Structure formats: structure tokens, C-alpha cells
Length: 277
Image (tube, rainbow, N blue to C red; front, side, top):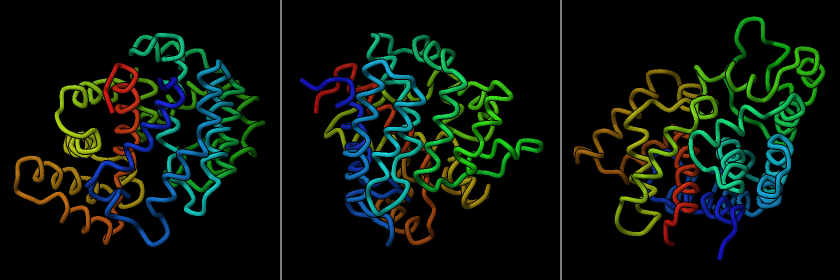
């Protein structure tokens, strides 16, 4: 029987195996410098951090350890956002509190040191992020551990940091909103039919059709993010082919990474609730 950390690792593996997920790496679609094997290795490397989260380590420390382990492959950032989603979910699950209220409690209990460890995680991998809001340059996450003194001076917890990003970052929005979209998508997975990887692909498309992807917004702009959502809607109603769209989005480097992160979180919740593989 798998434990909580192993279910989180399996969620990462199932997410990347879900095919097709237009714009994402999957079993049939890769980028020249970011391949399926990198995601597999990232999931293997992240396990120690996920175990720390399950064993009661602070959320920030567990996340930093997971990211350090994830980074031990040559593709760079494979699952930063997914692990940021999974770490508090694992903590909640390990305490038998895997619901919106339980995850809110985990988030609200984060400390300044958790925020410091979150920033230190950026030392291990390059992450595409928006420019910081006006007056927040000292807290630009790309500063990594150089921002630790500022965090301590301003007494900002990791929850505080997420609240400041929630209006433009889909992962941060889940943190402050009790992971509502993740829990809803987990229900879609549980109610689906067929292989779990096929269900993951459909859930990814449904999430993308529901809301523009924040990562695409950051990397490609608002028009591309809106297009990705409209094209996902077209796939769901049969006006477009998912495989053709996947190939096109890889060619155009449109990668809905936040939607993939949500899918990984939903897979973990569903697995913890009894989804059979």
C-alpha cells in the first residue's frame, strides 16, 4: 500500500503521463530541452521532500528539499509549481485533514522561516515569474536566498507571500482559496472513466477551458492565454483535435504549466481518496 508521499510522487508521474495535454510535455510531446524523462527524474528526486512534508517537517523546508531533489536532472524546472501545490496538501493528508478547511489551516500556520525556505528553493532552479509589483523589488523571488533578510525584517510568512501573488499566480491563488479548484478537479477524476492518464488529460483540458493559464499569461501574454482557453473549449466540444493542438502548442512554445500543476494536485487528492491505479 502506498503512503502519502508515494501518492504525491505518483501524482507527478501520472500528470506527465496524461496524454495529450496541449502545450505540456507528455508521453508523445516534448521540447528540445525539456523532455518526458526530465519529469520522471524530477518526480523521483522530489520524494525526500514529500516524505519530510508527510513526516511533519515545516512546509517551507519540505518544499525546498523537494525542489533541490527535483533539480537533479538536466531539464531544469520540471515541477516547481506542482510541488508548491503538493507540499501543503501532503501535510494536510498526513494529518487526515485533506479538505479545504484542513489545507487552509496548514497554510495559515506557515511561518517566516517557511517563507525563507520558499525563497531558497529558487536558488536551485530558474522559474518563469512575473515582474514583482511596485515597491516589491526587494521581495522578487528571483533573488532567492538574497531576499531572506527582507522577509525577516518585514516578518512575512509564506502565507503572506502567497497572498501578495494570488491575483496573478494560479498556484498562489489555490493556496489562499483552500485549493478549491484542485478539490473540484479531483472529483472530476474520481467520476471519470478509463485509464487514469486519460482522465488526467481530460481534466487538464477542462481546467484550461475554464480559466486562462497564469503561466502562459506570464510567458506568452494575455492574448495567448485567452487563445489557449478558447482552443481547449473547442477540443472539449469536438471542434478541434487534442493531439493536433498539442503538437501546435509545443511548436509555438505555449505551455499551460499552471494547469498542469492543478492537475497534479487533483491527482494526489483523488489518489488519497481512493482512486485506483
